[in-house]
Length: 263
Ligand SMILES: [Zn+2]
Ligand SMILES: [Zn+2]
Image (cartoon, rainbow, N blue to C red):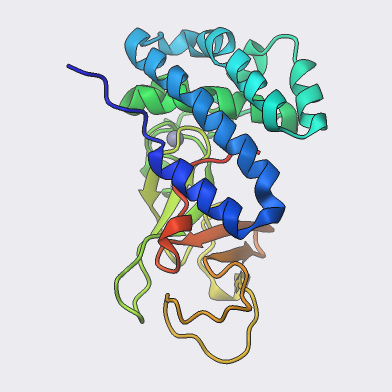
């Protein structure tokens, strides 16, 4: 059976559309596009070779990290390029990312960018390579119910953002979903709870959007042109003092978020 194409066609299209609209983001989107090119081969090789879960960090350190470093050198900011070159033993930060440990930004970038295509390729088996140390003892990190739905049901990883697809109706909000920071899997989540701590009290949660003149009802092209990011909101929680980006595909399908952006 022929191997399917890597699943990043829509990602490239979206990054190019965003680059045309937001020139100030050209460099970071350039890094992203270079990474997507690097992910193609890594994804194919991981599907063919099926590295053992316990050896995934070592496999990606030797097979994917060099490509990620090369892509970063070709398009990234100098501090990130220098930082990547200074990581002498990449298997260590990659293993730490799979274990859910806190990491310095450059190591986290290298680990996320290198492991993402492999975890996507492993699909349902991605969770076998992940053992999150931040999950309470005795709980399976992949047991979504035990985490109140705040952890990825596939790999136990934390969410990185929330998004909503188009509902198709002006006054109806689409279902809210979370996107895994580790394996890219998406899952449904309560619209009225904080993705970090589960807080549901409305008084503790505030949603921020860009201000504009007049009233706009529902997701639409009616958003005034003075709003630069009509598809983005920030959902802030006073209980855990965290804030979440939320992207709405109902406002602009070209910029709907459905993939991690290691940065
Ligand atoms: Zn995941
Ligand atoms: Zn919270």
